[in-house]
Image (tube, rainbow, N blue to C red):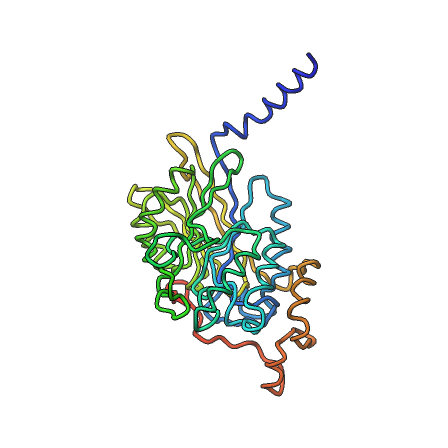
Length: 357
């Protein structure tokens, strides 16, 4: 009898999670790291003064923030990246994204969208091999619903159109969309990258049959994220990338069903960590009732996670030179009389006028 009472108590304690009428969910999000694995001198006059000066970014600092938020969270926390984790960074052609993925494994990322730069690690089809090697190394799934093998409609091996996770008893889906301009790259020969809005129109209904809530993780620019929200019903929130846009709070766009869809993006190069708090209600079918978000500076005030610091240093340490204020690639030191901040190849994206990268 006593054993039966214990079993009943355990079952009853599980009921609130199974039959909850609301779900609060926190999404931590990043995008467009572009290989900036160490803190660096970030200067962008179009961004808030908080981000204009000092040593910003670094994966070890990001790890500290993510771990801190997981410890203090009262609801499920999901960590996603919206693409372009490498290329253009100082160690791009030496490691092809390996330090970035290993650090993301250590941080416990839940998913990542394929970015256009993941598709052009080289100028030829060897880039496909580098991407698939990263996918195999990753402890998290990669997403891209509009990336297929030729005209077969079959997803590229190891890259998923969407995934579904059960959080607090609720089925939450994550659907990926990558940049269609990558279809013109010589490196994607043999693969098809279709229009992301059209692909979403096909895949969202399929994903909705398997989930209660659907989050799009995209690498298609802020402008196309707005079009996606306006044109494709069934998406509850969009976590974006590609345009390097700093969205200090979610932009709410009304979808064809009249529901508001929050869009977020966390700038570039790892100088900010995005935080999106969503609350859903079950009444009449799961629907969004509130969305709050912000960008958290990854700056000198954030201590480095020792394990992730050691991991990153094990790769890039031999190729950097330390100064009193920063570590810079040895090739930069060779090219200049004094260490200088890494220069951007394009003007920084403004909040209201994002540009694809």
